[in-house]
Amino acid sequence: MHVDAPNGRFAEGASLLDGRMLLAIDAYGKHLLYDFGDERWLHVHLGLFGKFRSGAMPYPPMQGALRVRIWTDAAWLELRGPTACEVIDDADRRRLLARIGPDPLRAHDRPARAVERITASRAQIGTLLMDQSVIAGIGNVYRAELLFRAKLNPYRLGTSIEPAAIVALWRDSRAVMRDGVRDRRMVTTKPKDRPHRTGVARRDERHYVYHRTGRPCFICGTEIEQALLATRKVYWCPHCQP
DNA sequence: TCTGCATGAAAAA
DNA sequence: TTTTCCTGCAGAG
Figure 1 (tube, chains in turn orange, yellow, green):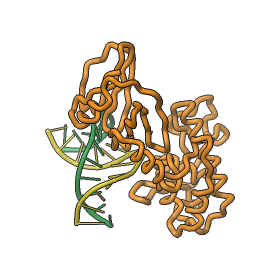
Figure 2 (tube, rainbow, N blue to C red):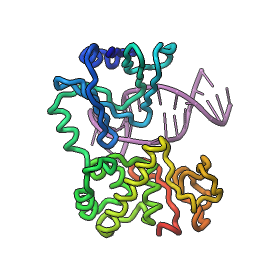
Figure 3 (cartoon, rainbow, N blue to C red):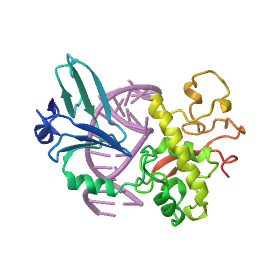
């Protein structure tokens, strides 16, 4: 397949991959690894702004800043604005995987290490859930929503939380994130809790607290609160999550 | 045209 | 703890 870097930021990496075969793709938390064989892995992390687009050939007119294009005779894929886009070797890959925690979406991962880290930490659970070395894959939306579903206040200290509650949160994250993968959409509300019980959740009823500052909690009607925690906005219901 | 903001994280200080 | 990097979009002026 062909690989190039229109905006030049990935020119060197693209030249290492161009003309090779893509053997496999895998995800570990928020990190994506593309196996191009012979110790050449394309490591992508989308960060806040990263976006993929893809389609059938021919290639559409190019516009905006484009980090990478990958294409064959039949199809194309393009990547813009990622936090990471680099070619790494086997040793780099091992170091990367060693510094991230268990991933709820990976079938064989277990929460034991996350339970240890959290119960031993004096940091707040809202901060710990954003730490990719504790649990890999949870971001700002799922942090807020998982804590609401668990009835845990984001400011609770790790040491104050029962191991069983952390295992329950792990299991819930696995269920909610698997739904997200299946539906390609982050819906964290249960149908029975939504004001409008239509088949598909309305846009404004997909989350319990995320981006709902000042609006009434679906469960108790209390106004949702917002604050900054671990440099990101966190949302919670002060009544349901005391 | 300009500003601020967004599902993030690493480097610098 | 602050700064930096990555991109696109909405809303203000």
